Length: 220
Image (cartoon, rainbow, N blue to C red; front, side, top):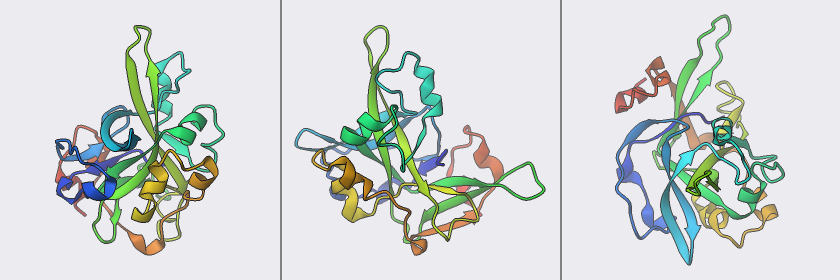
């Protein structure tokens, strides 16, 4: 799963590669959690745009928006066929930029899990693959939300958790966002990153509290 990530090193954003001309103001965030507004890159008109979406997808047909609390993640293997995600998988794919994310490792004999920080080995921004959707509340107000796709873990990270967020390599960004990419072609991009592309280390359990949001969270 992917329950927490960060975008603290905002100076590493490659806006040109993401196809973004109108660059938004970004505040560094080190503990991004479901239920909050997150930066997303998506196709719009003739190009891409940066938008803020609420993390936790609310299907367009939902009667109760609280369903979004359960849909912060979607399994990549089945998202294209699940009622909550299939429309978005077909037409509303997005990228959530991150400079790293967190996973919690179950430790034998202990109730408390060990948090880990995971980043790109080369320090680059990670392009997390996501889906976005829109929903209207009873007053007709449009609410835009998103989910992070997850894939089976690669060998290098297997000791930490059984799932990883979908991480799209740069050469797949355009294909993922393009409205011309079919469902079958998009599904070809759903795989774990290479073992040597990620690095991880143990961190303090301060990350467990969403109120803690500073760079020291990633210290070993």
